[in-house]
Length: 321
Image (cartoon, rainbow, N blue to C red; front, side, top):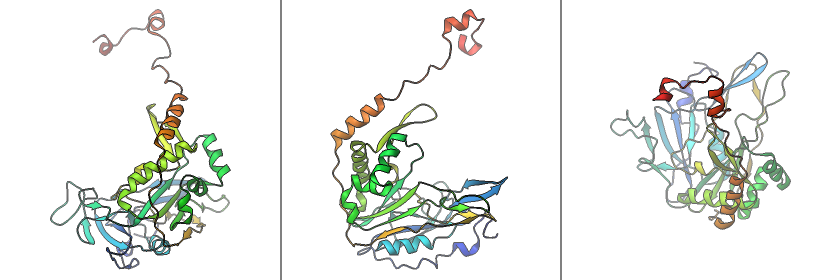
């Protein structure tokens, strides 16, 4: 199938473009997944003058290979070399440096599932993922981010040590996509990779940063479709797991779409970062205040039962039961 098809061309299944040697004792590392069939990226088409997006994000079968990423530049080169059928994880295989991937129910023999049974963070330095998403961000938090100088400066505000660290920050794969006569798409989403001294503490670091975000006015409560209160901030605490897929491959673009790719931010100081302080008391108070500002949910019925009865309403069989 061609470059813009729904399948993954045979050429994309090769790992030859990613030849970084793995040195577990000395190098931070990541895992590169290669899908046998389905692409692991977004697909964009032009329909009736509008750019449409489809997301392909399921890995049923394929391969996993651990590669070294000792510097931010090396990591950037690896990610730039990913093909449509590839994605990464910030953790590594428990055993060995390569394996066949299958689902938990269908794996056979030496195959592994993409789960915590087979993936972990190794001891020592590694890459912490910062996933910035502003989709549900309220105006007051957006204004706070802008006042600080943007998303990356907002992160440095709550993690000052990171400004002198080793990191790579990349725009969303949706950013910069355009068609003749249309302005480029602009996405606020960012993926940042920060070298930390103990990657196994990724979840703790993200939770500490979320607490810092609450204390700094950079967190908020979003409502789900069901009305549940969801904790959100400029730091996503859900991404600190070693087996989680991180989608960094370029998008599939159907003609006549093109993409003007923004240059990533790369800084190599060689200095791994330590876990930040967690201001739990201040964070808890800020979160409680934010929850208190959420109005109570509306009643399920717009009219009280007595009003419905007065207007001829009768209970259904299920209601009478």
